[in-house]
Length: 388
Image 1 (cartoon, rainbow, N blue to C red):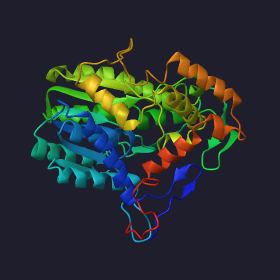
Image 2: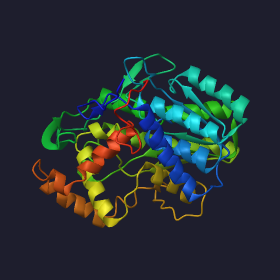
Image 3: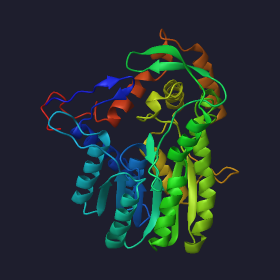
Image 4: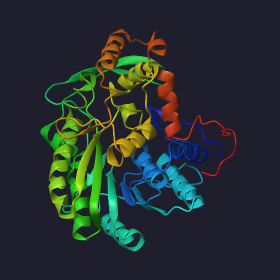
């Protein structure tokens, strides 16, 4: 079948296997060109199929030459439907790692479940012995509590009062407005349950009890703060409460890890085009304006560049690494520069459907969004019949 990008409401419903492999190759080549990194030896990446998690897997495997296990929950393709982009990404990692003689394994399943935790522990014991790095990078809409079986769903809503924001349709190049009603207390609690730090702590507790963490073990999770422009829907919204919980859990995990002289860290990363950010009101428009400004200033970074900087400067290098008063690693330092934010805010006030192509990097947004799903890559024949 010929596989084309099918986008509805800023969500891509298809993925191209060869395109996904090509974008994984591009990230691998970026890391390899930066040189070998003395870092982790045995790594577990939870949420390894896209975005920052995928980039972390690439840094561990191809930057540090570590043995690695990736965990993600992806859908396989059929004769009529493509697999998820994450499925193709994981298969590409397996293939490309094998070609270089690297030990890399993938577990496809629900990382929130007891079963996947147990399976992972067995694999660590058999294949790695112990791990010295755990990256936690899950962005999930739902989570089933392993104790009660209750299903929790996360929401992207403001807290306290309704929020009206500009909305970008990046496919059509249109600006409109949307209003979101505030989250209920139950919705906030559910979002924290799904996207907060509880499961991260469960993973560390479990692996610690199984004696699968090396001395000097490090674990890191990814967070986002962002500017005042998006604060109502993000940092001060339901997802922001989950991120605050994640950051609090890092402090608690850090205490637990004293037993192995370990460390728990949070990296606050830059806003980037992802499958999730494309559908958050206000955030997708903010990102398209941010890209325009940062590219003009020559300081734009994509996922793999951010995580390469994290590994080389903060986790295993000699810096420079910006750490704030709360101990958070600030990989968003360039995004949050005063001159960058002032220019983005100025453009935000001017933006409309009539001028969006001129003052926002909507084309860059489209290209990066499509590339996440394997489309728009050079060297790929998108007219060819492909087995999905």
